[in-house]
Image 1 (cartoon, one colour):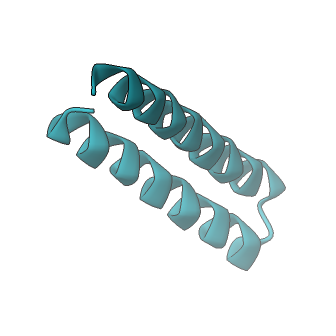
Image 2 (cartoon, helix red, strand yellow; image 1 turned 180 degrees about the vertical axis):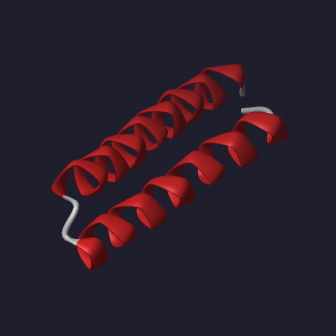
Length: 57
């Protein structure tokens, strides 16, 4: 996994956490769900990159 990909995926995950927290704090269910979705997407990307790393070695 390239360093750029790791940073990008982590940034997306943290952004999702921030959206989720903001949604919870403001009672905005749509923003909260969007944040959870962003986190899930980032986690899937990270998992895919880890699989690629295993087969590179």
